[in-house]
Image 1 (cartoon, rainbow, N blue to C red):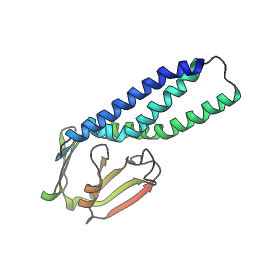
Image 2: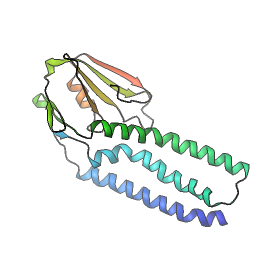
Image 3: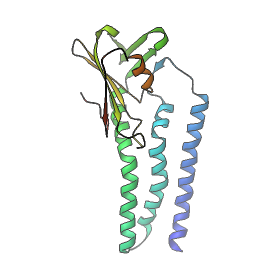
Image 4: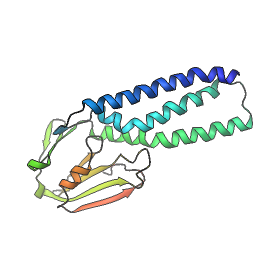
Length: 199
């Protein structure tokens, strides 16, 4: 009974966190507008982090309850280790990729209007000068499995003739429309378990 009394407030807290995440996702989805200039936004971050945060919101209160129990039996210790591995195994890769993409593209803006044939990239407020003819090849890195929590973390790299590489991550925009726009260039799609941006 002591464990149930201890677990109840933690589960209530987890339910409140889940309700907040779901509410934010609904609000950002209802009031989000189509933009032609893309930069890292709160709504895009919530959309990408929804499942990892939900996993943490459900798993961490349960794991925290074990901290308040005096001694653990062998069965409880094994259960604790298995659930910890599941929670961290699902959420940690997405959180690491999110941080990696954020550090990579926090000062990046993309002006993208496919109907008007416009693709411009700005780094720290300065336009990166290139045209479609300057693109030597395009690499589109995607996750191997679409069912993983981090499968929405993908990136496109534009290799220019002068040796520069322009990286655009899914933290800025959904990349399917961008790859459709760039389909007449030399587009290479690669599949990886973890899509870390390669320099």
